[in-house]
Image 1: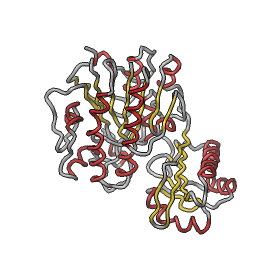
Image 2: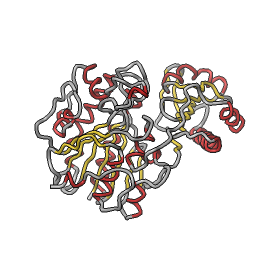
Image 3: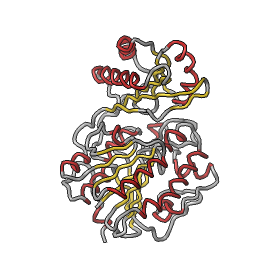
Image 4: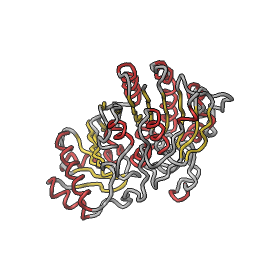
Amino acid sequence: MRATIIVLDSVGAGEMPDAAVYGDVGSNTLGNTSKAVGGLNMPNCQRLGLGNLTEILGVPPVEKALGAFGKMLEKSPGKDTTTGHWEFMGIVLEKPFDMFPEGFPEEIIRPFEEATGRKVIGNKPASGTEIIKELGKVHEDTGALIVYTSADSVFQIAAHEGIVPVPELYKYCEIAREILDKSGYKVARVIARPFVGEWPNYTRTPNRHDYSLPPEGEIALERLVKSGIPVYAVGKIRDIYDGHGITEYVKTKDNNDGIDKTIGYLKTVENGLIFTNLVDYDMKYGHRNNPVGYAKALEEFDQRLPEIMAAMGPDDVLIITADHGCDPTTPSTDHSREKVPLLIYGKRLKENVNLGERETFADLGQTVLDFFNVPLMRNGTSFKKELLR
């Protein structure tokens, strides 16, 4: 059999009970986006039960869903990509990753400048597209590196490919990763953010590369691989888990490329887990407070969902979810602390199963292990039995 997990990056389904702690009361990425654009057209997701999860204008509830539907709550502290994905696979964090709302301290920046031989400019939380527009000219004139952070625990380095060749930028990221790891700070990812073009009309290139902390303990993906079940990663999945539990991976240019490559695996591999992250919702629209673009991307995924389902075999399982929210309608450009959707379809699975609200994202990994008859993790509860006919 094959199981396919598709993470619609940041497509949250309503505020978590502790949203006030994160300043996210009222956030509902799906619901608020639908209202902002006068309704979403997502008939295929609707048939799977998407409209049964939260109020989505244009996507009303159905009386009989094609598969199972529910929501998952995040048990770990945080609202970032790494925390969400790690919890999917069984790691519930006790201590959140370190954030840098005032920029990185001198004890990080000084040794980084010394090791790279380049000055740092920026050093603040920022939108990646905005900060290269703001500082790109200075960077081109001086060769200084644009360093910034965000609502995630990230150390991002932006550089023009004509000033800093991509291999050199990757080397600088490795230097930053080593400095951060030795510093005692817990930073989830160092990210290379190369761009091209002329000021102020720069374009970020697909040569982004993430340098992640390795998972804090064993993850469900590693159990699968150890048991002879291959794991095929599409998009940034490989980077998020620092390669742990990944058999093979492919990078993606955008959501449609990610869908193409997911379908490609469904057409060529005979068994295993296909694990895909579609990042455009978050990167291109959520952080830029663009509900119109966000809505269009959601509708484009919905249009392609029948292709994915048609490529599935009789024993295959499809799971659609998200890792956090990023409501494009709120004043904040940060992620939002939200519940995430859970839609599950398989030709031999029960229809119209309401899985309710799962208390942890780790239920996802447990269920995948259960489907492949691999021993379960400590965290999470499998819902396999609820799905079987």
